Length: 80
Image (cartoon, rainbow, N blue to C red; front, top):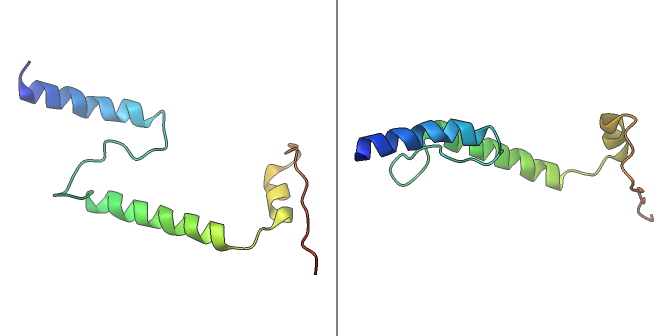
């Protein structure tokens, strides 16, 4: 196998693997970092996750999003 053939096989493999995971795999490189588009997507996802962690918990919203599916948990309200 030539190096070009190996690179082609590896390039063709990433889309198939991405369908099975939410992980950011096989995105390519731009120097020592990610390509700009993927870097911006990562920063936006990180900001959204950080906002979600630091925002107040809204059990009513979670219940509405779950619909009639039971979650097997109880909500405890803080004292005060």
